[in-house]
Length: 476
Image (cartoon, rainbow, N blue to C red):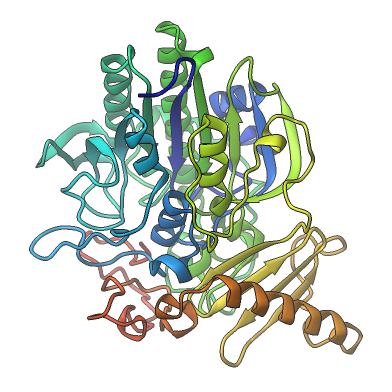
């Protein structure tokens, strides 16, 4: 059982929220008073990175503390989420929710899973209100409750919030962990409540310039580079912000706020016309590692225990979340020296500016890998390129690729070595993303002895028209 005084945890995970898409992140156009309220009552990270700039790999890394080349999820999962042949893609790995459940926490999921076998509660979760797939319409959507697929009347963001509030109410007398996994602001960016979209009727959207189409942009970019898509994206963020308001108010109403750690983040970033495309890492082909793709909002709040209104430039990654959370809760660390993350508790508390001696983060998406220091970013595409090097101090928008600048040869060589050594240290050869064939078009199979890494992903197809079962562009 949890020891006396151990806090509840509410983990709010959004879907495709750019690092720019909140008022507290410096955007004066988007309406997010409750995300801003959370930031004012906690610590906000300006430099927080996902482990892979697409949904399923990022979510697997959050839960397991492993990089994709350790857990084998390299792209959004396009198959085996539901019958007739479901697969559990992170089966066999320890998730932090396993540790919490074993320590006596009641664990609940409200929202998106997208790690296979959506019908079955997994990894310590006993409450399971789950999306069947990785995307969904927003009105009258299907959800899984008590092992049954049923239509939820009304707006999906509200249905997820309603379930979360019921879970909090039902477990108010016992330590609980709750994952609120909104599908917002993932597409589709239409069919949202009028009271949300009308908020942006007169918005100039200066924070989302519709730049000339990127030469690598996937087909759906042209479909979304319009004012109505911008209104929809901003509206759906404001809709999830309304859910944050209801959750925070419920915790305060029940007298639980001061005994609840609230974490807010997104699975990956997103561009809405920035750099000339819409999407994240697979918004282009070759796959990209732009800042808007690999950076995400991150806020942690626990009144009386963590500072209020603190903003830190510390560079933290989702692969650091598991060791940090377990450390904060006083639970045993997962004893595996191959895990790359470290505890950021001293940074959360304001005791240190960084948790690592070497301030570097790494990212991967199939054969594309990134090493990022405070001032420099190097991107390597296996086996042949195109490689990229950016001086982020002078070129924060990543406009000038210096990878082939003669004056940067030594730096490129040094960063190539640093990148290679880090991945050699942590990669499981059977799960190696460099061999995955990952193109951003989806992962078909779980990687195991029967399905080796080379056969796991869809070949690349540039989808100029929507082709998946829902009519949405096939991106996750």
